[in-house]
Image (tube, rainbow, N blue to C red; front, side):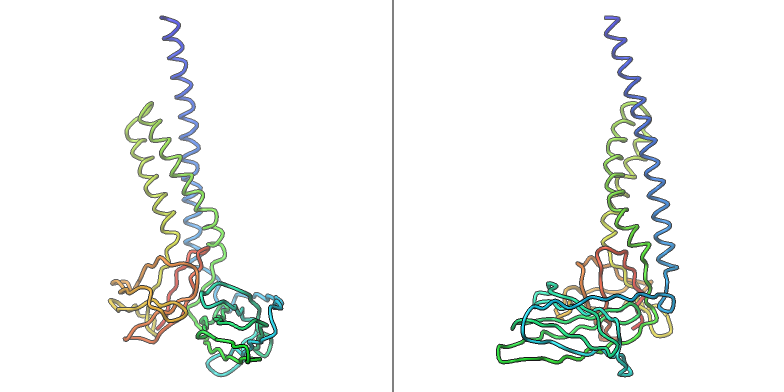
Length: 287
């Protein structure tokens, strides 16, 4: 009997030591995630703006057919826009090919007959989207013109992209570790540690979910927040996907897939924006 009690005591001590190690690792993860979260939010507020960002990409167009879809990209003053990424998609908005506009703002795709959608994007410019383009057997070439304009409220957040890629697994690990720590705390430690771990489980899962959020803040040309305005969120093809209303801070939270969207309102001009599932997207749109 004595030996049995000793073994039980030994196992209890070993379990307690294991629990201590788990809890130390657990709270270290919490600290790391907290630091990353603070840094990511800091980069969102202090991200490089248009005049401090330089990026020169290049990509050749794939040869896919004998028909041609060509076009030109111009700003509001009819000036050509170079190095703008142009993407060719099918009618279901599935990407087929992409290229970049040349110095004259021109681009070209070689395709087979069918229905296509052309989108263009570049940091510092509002995304441009065509209507559905139908290329028939008798057509040899279709010319399209895309108009866009510079936006002063654009910000890039490359550090935040890295944060999100690593933060999602961290939040999941925190949630799993929190469940185990709750069990250990209830078995060997106090209810306070158990409640702390349980709270972290909830917040970790919440952060994991909220990282898919697209936050929009609407303001007028003077930067004043537009409160309680009703808007419609439409796809690139113009299909209304969601109706929303800004809160007292002029904000809207959306859960959308990656792609191009239009924000439409009877009370303000429409704006086009892009949602990227790999980024923490927080856009302040002047309308």
